[in-house]
Image 1 (tube, rainbow, N blue to C red):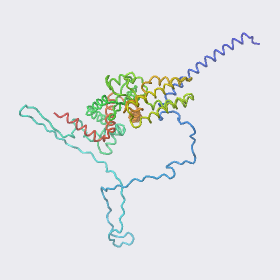
Image 2 (image 1 turned 180 degrees about the vertical axis):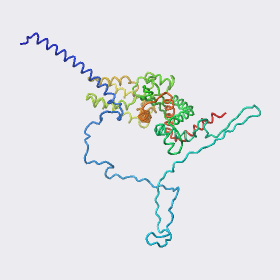
Image 3 (image 1 turned 60 degrees about the vertical axis):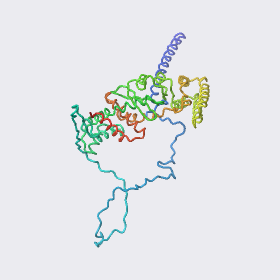
Image 4 (image 1 turned 135 degrees about the vertical axis):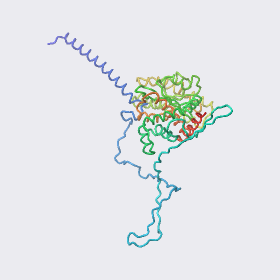
Amino acid sequence: MISPTLQTCQNCQKIKQLTEENINLKKEVDNLKRKLMLHENPHTPSSRRMYPTRTGDHTKNSKRFPGRPKGHKGNTRPKPKLIDITKAPEKKCICNHCGAPLSEPTRVEHHVFEEIANPKPKQVIDFLQFEYKCTTCNGYTSIRHPDCPPDGIFGKNALIQTTLMKFEERLPFEKIANQMECQHGLSMTAASAFDVTRRVCDYLAPEYDVILGRIRMAKVLYVDETGEKVDGKRYWLWVFVSESETFFVLRKSRGKKVLAEVLGKNFRGHIVCDGLKSYSNFSGRLQRCWAHLLREAEWLFEHCEEARSLYVALKRLYADLKVCLVGDPPASLRKKLKAAAKRRLRYWLKKRYESKEAKRFVGKISNGFDHWFTFVTVPGVESTNNRAERALKEPVVQRKIIGTFRNEKGTRIYETMMSLVATWKQQGLNPYEAMAQNLTTAWARTVS
């Protein structure tokens, strides 16, 4: 029979062992939760989520068939009104059945199709450059055709097409070279295609600087950043969107020094952004993104019942403000709306919350309290950062294709060409025509 003292010692050892196991398991659970948060958080895009985010009853309806719903009226593509070419077969003179002679056709049917031209072969152009000597000062003056590049062996259209294949059509350099060979019979290697984009980037660098100057003068900027890899190392792609310009930079840092470098220390415009501390450390003229706030509040409500009332209150507050701002009210009314909105938000922040998640979320709102209602008093400032997020969609798609940049030479080309193409599209310009015009202007500067 085991003595009571020995039994007590064994129980104490078992309790101690179980306590240690419990502590270790809690640490392991916390580590797993932190890892899961990389894939499941309110700001994770749907393409990176590990599990579906839909809530409620979403069972598959067996009566629902794929395709358009019943009664939906389809749209038929209209036939072209202008005919470019009419092609007719050779007329028949003899009947296929009896061999008797035939007269003119008794009926003519029209089959109208939209066709593309056959791939045009390359052209070899000899551009002449004239040089004059002045008999007065003995100086030399040169002149050449505006479509003549200052260097290289590829012409203007080849340079533009290659560059747009890379930065608009998302093709790798190997496929660009293949397309040039198949469509135009133009022999080009992947290295040559890369060198073409480098030269075009050098030609258009002054236009990139022009966009930067306009960004620094903007009254309202929408700024965001996303991760990139350069030679396997972590970089950040920053985007700055104004009313008519989009500007990209790739930097190692995610801190405020990038903002100071791009915008300058004397930037006086308003910045619409997310909750990254770099923005508040750089400027006090901020508008925090309500889309991020409501998305995080909804995610918190789905994981914490205590946050339901807070989520509903934030959603209702935002909806009320959007309704009150319709019609561009005067400044006096805007100030009253902002003061009332601050009182409503402060009321919900002062409530007591038990869960750590709710307390953390309330603390996040409180830290940026002065930056939630800038859009109420400053006309032209939007309440969300959707402009910057939309501008980052194209780079995110290209990131999935590229994987990583090999060196910083490629990052310079990337940020320059992506800025130019995005800005031209934002201004309603045709990228091909805009690039052609800017190349002609850039080449004219090289003639002495």
